[in-house]
Image (cartoon, rainbow over all chains, first blue to last red; front, side, top):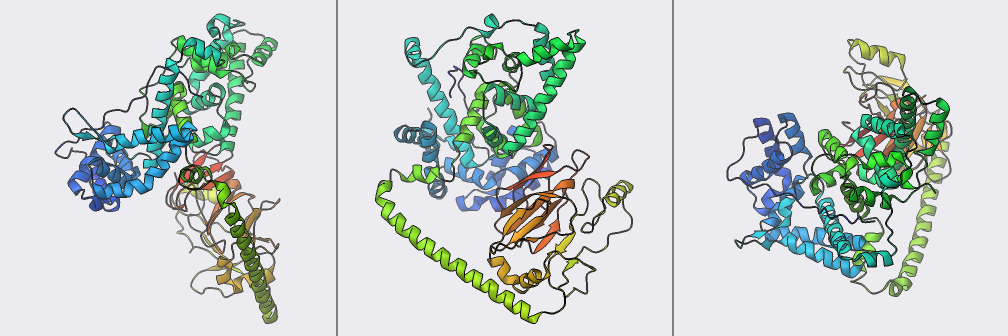
Length: 307
Length: 318
């Protein structure tokens, strides 16, 4: 399900490589030097100085305000071999491309086909990205490769997948914007009234209590609730996204909804709502019984300018 | 059916103000792969909780991850003849595979029987299996650790100084024959309930590795191993805590259960190490999931949601 949003994703600018190595601290410099050997940089003619520049660029991008220990931890967590491979490809190193193409090209095509659910469209999407990975000349004639944006935080294949997905979503959104209102209605799109207009304001105290309770939750808990109740993702989906088993997600959600009900109920009671009325209200908004058309709501939320 | 616009919870969730700029592709990838620093992970959670676009992107990207079956099909479909043309060859290959497998199983079964017969003929006294434990620990221990570990003293556990870990760090549990090692203090224990089988297994110590064992947790919470002959033998017999989960990656076997007990064997269950996990919630949770993506990288999860990850085969956890 793709949402017709006008907001387009864009990659941030790659870090400009300075000609001299930035000062990061001796501990960070040592950590970077330690990783040179395992990076395979020598295979692509990347010198230790150039290697230091590349990694320092990543450190300054993600940990500019952090202490030395966090910077060292960041350096240790980098996918250093893939980072060097990507930068060597971006620099036009043939040996690097000879490694990159057999390793990632087929995977890229498979991901594109899976995203588009169509072989032709998938090939087109993958070819488009391949061209950008190889590099497109800028106004000064210098070839700029998309691989310059890769920072080595996750796997290179994962990064290519995310970039490809971004591109696919952006294309779908552009296409969605091009489709006329009549066509959308012909395809079965319906436009619900704004929830603000139709919501029966049974008791504003419920909304207030929920808002206050949600504000107390951690970011992770809010993400779980949003992914499960708003986006209607499955437990397995959420587990894949967060890297935990789906039964762990299930347990967390159970605990979360139980706690949510308890706190909302307590707030309602302290606001003077009779316990029996509390039960009625909570039954109406039972968070474990949400089986609804989320798309319509999200569309409405967006047109209402919530985000 | 209840309508979305009538649900205040969803309205409040959707109303959250967006937190910070969109994370870039690197951060989202690292987030789903679990390689972000904790601070960054919380920042991404904060953003995702309020940004439906990024949740959608993350979901679509993880869904597009190659699966075990679909990738080769998608990759090969354009380059090769239709699947139908391969069907006769597939049938032939399957037939050969079945015949080979049957022969292999029969041969392994015969070997096991032969070794069991030899073991029965030798028939010495009852097989006493030995557990070799780590050398005694220094007497001086932090007070908090002494109290905790002595209260939970178990035969297979030793305590080690140092706060923040549960129980022993490397109390080595070895399932071996009756010849005790003179250099190490030993404690007699029957790791296998059936001594004949234990002897047979110890006699075929080399073969036990080549025959891939099967694993299960029985109803009493004991980890059990079988070599395909239907005979299930308990391992870690002296462990009183109920085990809940067993996870196997090649010859690496992980067993976890109550009281945050985690055992590891890197030789198909012949020898075991108790693996201490860092204390996170102050109590001793029940381990219910163990997942290893590689022999080095894995996650252990407890019933209360606590999780530990390792990137070095269990040497360190966080």
